[in-house]
Length: 299
Image 1 (cartoon, helix red, strand yellow):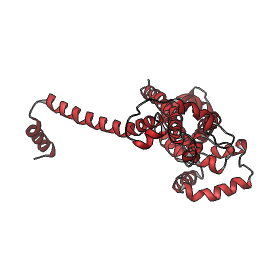
Image 2 (cartoon, one colour; image 1 turned 30 degrees about the horizontal axis):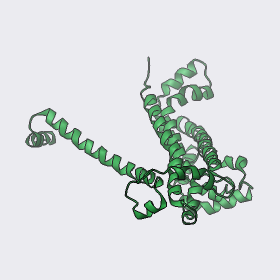
Image 3 (cartoon, one colour; image 1 turned 90 degrees about the horizontal axis):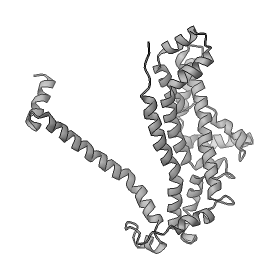
């Protein structure tokens, strides 16, 4: 008896011959799984929002209970009390924007410039560069921090955003490895048709290959920006005069007991700082789905 016949026999004994019954069972199972996953991921956000609307007394009375009265006063105080040195909330928000969004523009540009020739051309040193990318990914972030800090300090890049931005334009990271695989999956017939029409290699990259890689680029950009938005180590080590929101939250969590209304204010700051990644993901997810629906060879 083959595996397919065994499966069909088991299916008939379990669900009968009614195909609609099996579909309903599968739908119910997946629906339950999705509901559990939604609760698992949304509960921490709901818990943080609930505690940000409580008074200090309510919070220490019960962190799980809903707020008796919704107090938005602590959200107003965030813009005046939530500070790191001379940097207030809005200053840290601006720093978060250019650190997260700006860095990933340079990073993905460098990754694309490195991954494209590795995926499409054969040249001396190709395997070596690919090996460098893989080796670079395997180095622990913490393990390389000391050497990186010493180098950046020697080059006078500390608290100097313009020269420090050169560190974002490297490309030897996971983004380059993902783009390498994506570029190899794009049919070369597009490029060959562009060459026949007189396009240069640069024009082929910019007008033929990169537009087809938009879904990959958008997905990488969104994930990288969200990761960089929540990263405080860069501001803590290299740009201490330009604290972002993640670094501000990292420092403020040790001061909540010494600031009036510090605990609800801390949770409120978390909610405000989470708005940008949430909106970015919602907008970017739709864009990715629209771009993924376009493609294929046309004759």
